[in-house]
Length: 329
Image (cartoon, rainbow, N blue to C red; front, side, top):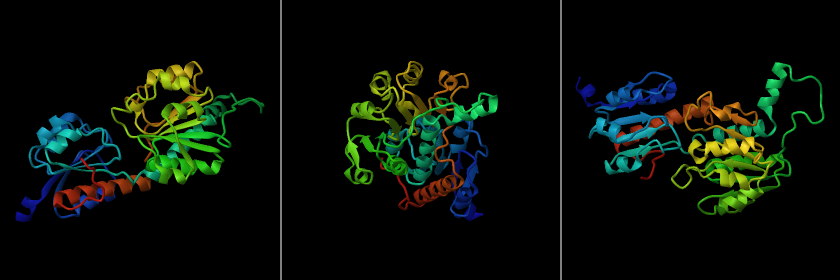
């Protein structure tokens, strides 16, 4: 009984892969309470669940703000998020309370890069549109100009944010015969750029010169709405725009206008604002816009790895030990 009383409370905000849950339950140092559902925890349940918790295991859909932190109380030592992004966390408030934060920056690089390449090909080669034509009777005979799209061979690809994921995307695109890689970001990354012979340029130069634009930058006040009408107007009319970073870096009204007026050729999005995107949203009505439901990291192996890493980050925080991946606050 005494040992049970010493266990630290951990609240898990969603149903997670079994290996991640097992890592927590078999640790011997915590008592796990969980919102056991595929759907996000309602705020009132989150407020109740986090009360008195020493550790919080959360998702990118959980907004951890001052109200949640206040409800948790002074026992909360660590927040571990099953994500690489952390814009759902009130970092300033968390830092002021002396709470440590774990995240999963490396675990989803390969899966997200693969998805970005798949989304780019689906968009540029009109795969979704073509598959629908095969189903609805639009496929009548072979036609020289029907369902033509844009190929990667000999093209210029612009990478916005040449971090782990941006570099992984570029490395996967290189064998397609890409002629030139451009990249932009807060600062040059010569070591990463050398692996793809990438050229550091301004955002405007990248927009003007790229045939394909892939966005993998982090979300910040500086990147919010960065892709707007002004920037879309600088792109080629044949440009393919791909976003696998955060939906909020794109002004979606401006993107809709760019797609419907021929400013750019097509767009592929794995992230939107809001998520999920309402089914009557104008972007979903466009044949030249492919939208996926934020599945960048959705492979069985990746999600399992992420769940275990999130658990190990949390356990390390509870023990006062170094985390495998701790966010510097």
